[in-house]
Amino acid sequence: MTSISQFTADVRAFSEERDWPKFQDPKSLLLALMGEVGEVAELMQWTREADVVSDFESPERNHRVGDELADVFIYLVRLADVLGVDLGQAAEEKLERNRSRFPTQGPDSIIGKLPSKR
Amino acid sequence: MTSISQFTADVRAFSEERDWPKFQDPKSLLLALMGEVGEVAELMQWTREADVVSDFESPERNHRVGDELADVFIYLVRLADVLGVDLGQAAEEKLERNRSRFPTQGPDSIIGKLPSKR
Amino acid sequence: MTSISQFTADVRAFSEERDWPKFQDPKSLLLALMGEVGEVAELMQWTREADVVSDFESPERNHRVGDELADVFIYLVRLADVLGVDLGQAAEEKLERNRSRFPTQGPDSIIGKLPSKR
Amino acid sequence: MTSISQFTADVRAFSEERDWPKFQDPKSLLLALMGEVGEVAELMQWTREADVVSDFESPERNHRVGDELADVFIYLVRLADVLGVDLGQAAEEKLERNRSRFPTQGPDSIIGKLPSKR
Image (cartoon, rainbow over all chains, first blue to last red; front, side, top):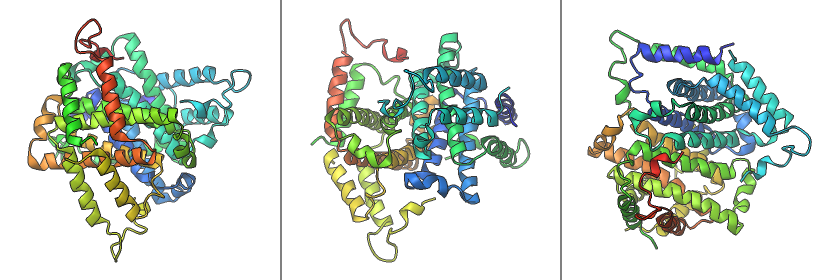
């Protein structure tokens, strides 16, 4: 049960022990994050929409994509940390706001709204 | 102190209450994540490298970028969940492997390695 | 029949007339390109794979996505120009190399290769 | 002097000769484009802002980044083609519109506007 704030602290310590913070300005970290997002994309880009989930059910493929998602996450927590953002708190607040924006029933229900977001 | 697994469960419940999982195949979620990464990029792209951190120190700007990073995180945990990946565990394992790959001292030290990753 | 090199020169002149080259270092341009890629993603992320092409057949939607693809292209030619890359020549060379890498027949044929690129 | 429309036709022929259009729906092409953008990012992410241009002046590095930019361009023209967008025309129109949006002088001049786009 890793907490977001503990993992952020772990990644910070890992970076500082290697004297990497001098390379880790926000724009560089964001480009690194993009590079890892690109690697996730390469794992699924030519698989048909309906087949992607089952394609990653094999242990080898599941481990592979988990490894790339982990890289995205590592750069994301590091980027938030460098920017002075508490990622866990920001995420909780955003999810709470989304609960208000997209009620589950009533006249403002999201039913039918999502796909038409254009 | 939000745990990664609890937040993953919260985002899953949020999606299921709105009947959104039918739209949330991995490729669609990855494109949505890219859209949010793009919004983070737009917040800092024209700021000089040396000025980005201080630019986000104001409460208004800090909240703004935190909001976009939260969106990236929400799509990341949802994508991992749909793919059957335990993001917290994958991230812990990756960080542990990185500790071995990049020792902090000795003949295999990372000193000088990072910038030459080409 | 716009040539790639003429369009590159047009975008360069546009930038210089506005004194923008001082902001247009490669990392900033790449982040700007990413922002535009993200806007293309937002236009199609929740549409089913089989419906995307027809969704963009309406003149309004077609113009919309064309506008975003144009933004990606503008940043791409500008980035190549700033990096001293002749994009048209690089693209011709790459396509020629791909013709050799992926023969259309014979024992090295691509048949069945692409989807297994993992 | 390759024209954008001729290159688009060349990439289309290349794809059709290999029976690839069945894989090349817009979302898959956009993920592939993202993968190539990520490879460009990996080439420059840890280089200081002020050093990137000179870093790519060596023939080997210049060829390397040109190769990745070519991949981005190939997927971009293919994506536009599949979406029924005339990329050259869309790009010309967008640049023309930008000339109006950002006059080079007068009360609506861009001077000082760009960096504050937040």
